[in-house]
Length: 509
Ligand code: NAP
Ligand code: MG
Image (cartoon, rainbow, N blue to C red; front, side, top):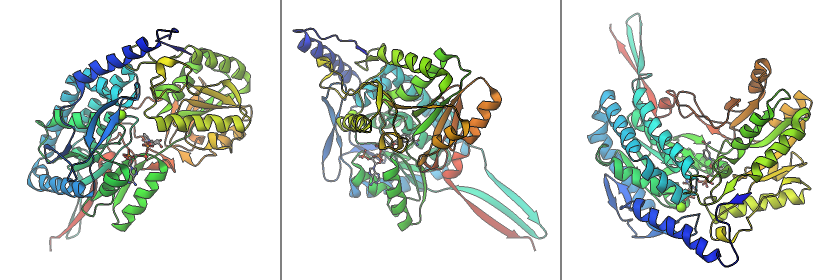
């Protein structure tokens, strides 16, 4: 493991100031002007006039403060969204919505560098990965602009009956998202909701509200007022109020399984439809025929991309005995050469985690793995590097020899920790691979097509990659089995999660 800023005995303070200064100067360039609640096309203060800080996890410095929405603000946003739906958006035919979505995509693309820097500052992800997110966000709007006219309805005639099944938008939807892909996830939510003809009240995560607010600022001229409302705040306040509001007709949530269950219970009170994109603990299976170098880079990306802060992270490795030693040596070497450091640096592989809380969560699981008798191939934890001590950094961990029932194997760590298992019996391996409460994703690495397809079908998960990982393409639906969620994003069918069908039965008699 290397870091870009090698601390010298007396150079420590100077190096630290360099990262901080650099971040301050980029912040001065890209921080949004408006950090209020975006309601009805305007930035406004919260009713209680409260704010909260959002922090740069690379330096530990406060970036800015942001309005703290609560129930009264959610009421206001929901009512602004209904007004926009009734007065404007419901009158926009598909082609007109398509033009709006395309304009949003263009706007995002035109501001790629700025949005990427903002995302890196607020979330800590390496700038190279932040650019991938921004391009993906634009792609979402472009994709849903393209499918706006899909699944428009059906007609049937039988005897004297003429039936129509039409798809109607819900009107106002509530969307609550997490912090690991803030702008990308806002786009995964807003694009299909708007394409299907709804207005949205979106609550970004408290750790990363800035890119959604900047998006609101940027699209203010191209999206009619009130169609998109962005309501930063805390989960138990703004989040809970959005997800249980009686006038919200549909809830889309991305986050942890624990909060997802609560959202679903709350939704039962008003019998509101819910889609949930929740946690994961995904297996990556390596067969004996692999090119080991290629497998090393796939396995490494599967767990370490975005510092392990991916719901689909391949966090349990099942490697065949025949290649295990070679692959694990290669993986350990790859980890050792990973660059942990300033996320604004183009060369950085691993930035900080999003918050102190997430560092502690990862470290606790690493310690639990030690207590469980884990054998550490690479022992991570917090780096011993004075230049990084104010940030939320965690080094990668590779551990084997854990009982598959132990908490570090069963529970989502959401950090750069890979638990390793060797296998030689296929059926036993698949049984273990499926022995978690999650079922979001999985990976299979082999050039044997028959074997690859068998394993992909045997893994109980909503998305399985063969010889790649994290590669999400609009058009191929993404979502979980088991406790990883309900519903699918990224495809034309996602529109159906944002519409309800109405049957009109006309008598011709
Ligand atoms: P989280 O705690 O569940 O938070 C997610 C969102 O819910 C945040 O906006 C949060 O607000 C809000 N929230 C908290 N309590 C709420 C409540 N009682 N009612 C309504 N909303 C509430 O999740 P996280 O830890 O931030 O995010 C990581 C999790 O997301 C992981 O489990 C990961 O696997 C999952 N994830 C899933 C997918 C997927 O597509 N399946 C994608 C990415 C991440 P605050 O931020 O203010 O707490
Ligand atoms: Mg932040």
